[in-house]
Amino acid sequence: MSAPDKTIPALSTQSVDKSFGSLVVAKGISLTLPQGERYALIGPNGAGKTTLINLMTGMLNPDNGRIFLGGDDITTLKPDARVKRGLVRTFQINTLFPHLTALESVTLAICERRGDAGVWWKGLPSYHRDAEEAYGILSSLKLSPVAYKPTHELAYGQQRLLEIALALATKPKVLLLDEPAAGVPHEESSELFSVIAELSKDIAILFIEHDMNVVFRFASRIIVMVGGAILVDGTPDEIAADPRVREVYLGKGHRAHG
Image (cartoon, rainbow, N blue to C red; front, side, top):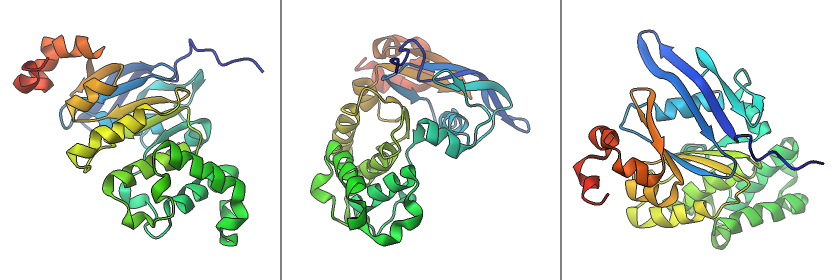
């Protein structure tokens, strides 16, 4: 079995457009996420960041353009088919199972991946191998101390990490994180992103985040969106120095630090 071609991007889009009537929400979006990289997607509210994630995951269909996962055109695939091929996004908090333990939740996600979820009624002891894998995922996210706690008892930052654990249970090649630190106390957000940064380099990550300190600390490259289009993308140093980005987004507060 040959090794994967590292020159092929993990995820890419070519000239993707999307409109709702006269409202243009994505125009000519072309981007490339290399394998194993950590890219940030930033921009003011209404820039189209979540819309782009929805287009990539198949929640929305583009009017024009193409979307590729590795070398495969996935433009017309349904969301669940994209997940099976390795393109996964984090879920909103209300999709977690509040009364299942963290370990049960991740084990269930692994059973779903293996096609065993329909017989979940057998109970956790019947899924020893899956539970071991789930515990390993929780440990990688520093959640092993709360593995046996019901989800509703977890701190908010731990719930956000549990969302990521559920995504990792699908064995993704690309992980899309839509504001993973949203609602997390400021003092916990850096810790959360430190855990994310330690995820396997086999996984490419694109994350949306408003905290610029987090973005500039953890992203190897930053894509800036404005008005449904990509304004510029570059390294953190290039983005911090770009006058267009300062004008439309970063503002005076970041100039003092940049």
